[in-house]
Length: 331
Image (cartoon, rainbow, N blue to C red):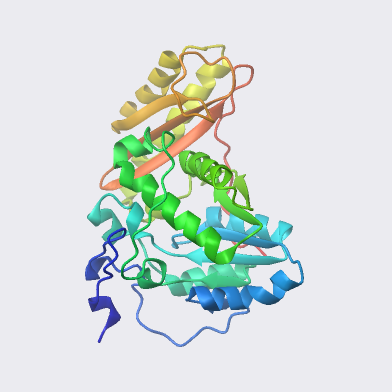
């Protein structure tokens, strides 16, 4: 029987056959990679056992695939700091609030494996949905409060419940010393840090800077869905952050004024923001004044593609989004 025609029966992550998480690419012979690919928890732990016995430092880079230079920067950071680097590749159905978004999410395991291998990963963990959410799976993990606003309000409580559940599972599966995440998903990193602290998990969460295209657009796997016209309009997001950062650098401290600057820049590109908010970077509660470091977070749909971005603002010298040029390859 074709496994893609068999739907997992987990109540936590129900997925139809058309929403399968594995690659959309046709079957091909295994690539001659230095990196080892494993698909089960038992094989992952067996692959890491020798390093763990020797006291080696293990780094985990969780991804949903469709790797780009932002992911490669996380792998490079892990490679520089750890003895063994694990990259997980799993499109997590539990965190998608829209079936269309899950169905359209890019899946290209063969290309991702080549990129991860070239970036310095030692192990690629690419489990099936059944491996992560086996039949009868009935446990979920939720961080209360932090996941209710911004992305939580826009996408529903199920989104961060799905994120927390899969991250908790991946940390338990790989048992890394350090796990690497990108600042682009700022709220996610805040939620995950609280999860790790509250559950006393023995792992350090390392948040790395957002990597941007030369014109400022934050790198995202979803960017591949944008048409050329939508790609141009998507610049509304980084330019909105720049507008707010410039106003803050000029001495503006009113959150309403900073939000208005960002919103106005987006509307000028014909992009209606889903939300634009200035919040505390630890509690995610709204700020009325920029009296100390704060997070300006925003989200919008450009065509059918939903994009998010953020920037940290400071009252003395607001930090504009960094224009990090894309890397062609990371050794």
